[in-house]
Image 1 (cartoon, one colour):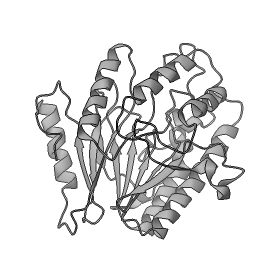
Image 2 (cartoon, rainbow, N blue to C red):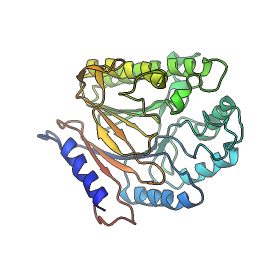
Image 3 (tube, helix red, strand yellow):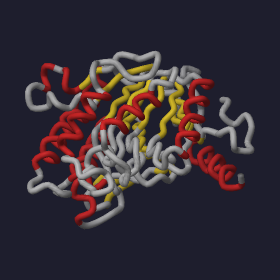
Length: 329
């Protein structure tokens, strides 16, 4: 309880808005890195579903890792999670993590071919233009846009949508080094997906400029290692460079939501020169990292694009917590 109270205090201190200029707002829920330990983790996952259905946000986003890295990558696991996703009343948007394809070569995961698993993942979770959930919304998918053909046609998992003057988008950037020469004889998969992601980031911000969006919110799985050095972050440097370039050009608020470390935090880690981690901190870029198993809980984000600081972030309080009513605005 003391830990959760501290989280609430920190979030309010960091993100409490200044003078509001508009009452228009939108609320979504983000979570990920779950379910892991089954069947035990299913109970907490279902509690997230129940709370999300009760709160009725505009949409819910799962930021990837729908299984642990040591559990099977069989189709049965994918269908099991797909059934869990169907329990959400709000629209559910999902972006992949590394555990469901990149790490499927592991012995305990079944020694699958990761590329084959990625293709199967796309078939099961991204069959059309709409989101998941019982009340889906229309999405614009990278693989469906004529200007993205033919090179980026496979990347149907990269999606964007806009609500309440805010541009939202998913990026297929995963843990395990973003699959940069992870276990394959070459870097072909990474190179092609990285090029698609960079093109998608450009497209998202072009759309934001076109619609005069008040903010941009991006979702991906990986912690891109903002402050790390050396080979660990090679697979993320292009993404970090794109974030810095667009943050400086866009100038309006940007929120990056990711998982990977299973640790809740909110900060401003992006610098003008993110590769060498130098230059001024880009104050319009905020990072939210969500919880992960065994601490399976969502994070509630209220976006008010016309406020000076438009992101109000607070952890979802679960039935087993002792802070009643904290989920309510």
